[in-house]
Length: 73
Image (cartoon, rainbow, N blue to C red):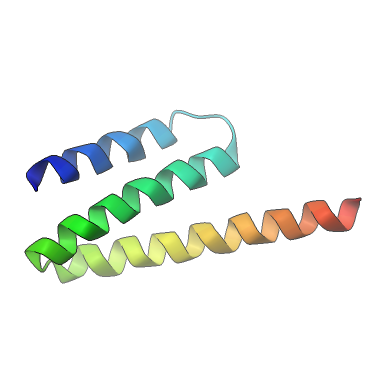
């Protein structure tokens, strides 16, 4: 299960290396979901709360960006 934390960390790191914001948010969400599995398995409430909040913020911005693109066209 420890490997999941490493995989999540690598994906989150890669997300910060991208130039496209939506790709950053998508990859970051994938890393956060992996971390959630790890956190639930080990009962790490601070990690559960943090990653859940990051996912919510990322999803809000992804949704908001798509909504703005639709309004432009």
